[in-house]
Amino acid sequence: MAANRQQGSYLAEFLAGFTALPAGVVLISTGSSGIGVVTTIAGLALLLHSCFGFYRIKKLEYSRN
Image (cartoon, rainbow, N blue to C red; front, side, top):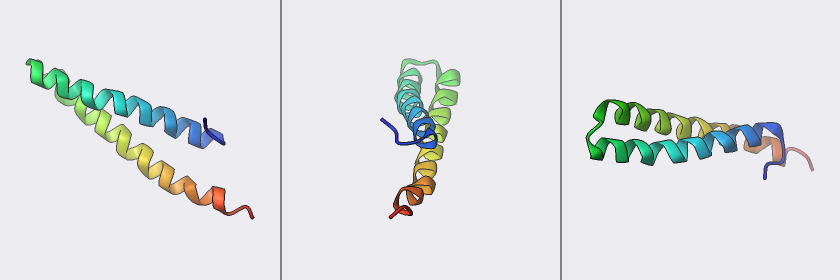
């Protein structure tokens, strides 16, 4: 799925964030707002970090001609 180790770790981080964000939203909507807010913030942080990581390592693929 990933061409190198960095892409694989950012992909795993993206998948974890993509799972945690909606899980936190569901927890907030069901009434457990404490853990839901923490899970939502953690999922959003994981998604943002992985997106910035993908953007940063994207240049490495195109440097080899």
